[in-house]
Image 1 (cartoon, helix red, strand yellow):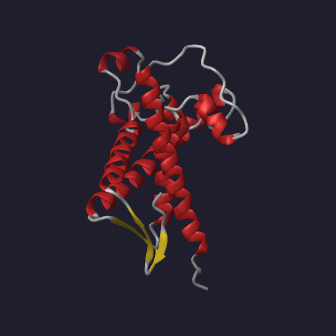
Image 2 (cartoon, one colour):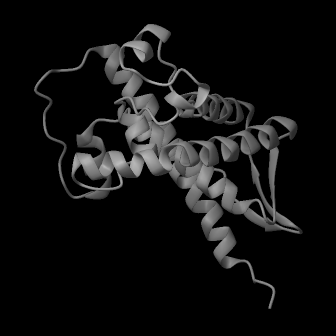
Length: 197
């Protein structure tokens, strides 16, 4: 795995074109996922909703990846919806803007070295985490439980997966593990670098 190392003015890591392309695609997909859903005019009219642009901003459609990116703020549904009404739009915007900054930096830098400038590291850590959260929505609960409890054996699936589903899950889990290691590498590089006093 490519690890980050401190360099003057920030942190650097070797990154291949395949890795760069996968991460750019993942950022783009998560960014799209964060866009507020647009309901057809007929539905909003039937529901008596305001037809202004802001009316659909706080609508939360059920999606495992989106649920991990924008988790409920409370255990009971009523309080969770109230919290979502208050924070959903702002949280979506903050996450989307951060991912936009990462996408721009990653696509503008060329060559095999990615440089994260000092001051950008928290955007990178947060952005990588958001992509990981979204990807985790695609992983089976058995995989995620096994990751948090390495001694535990994976349980057998009730519905066996097809070859394509197994292959897709293997790709997704490999990318998830690569991102996790990459994020950890950046965090360790930051922690080991002497901070200005």
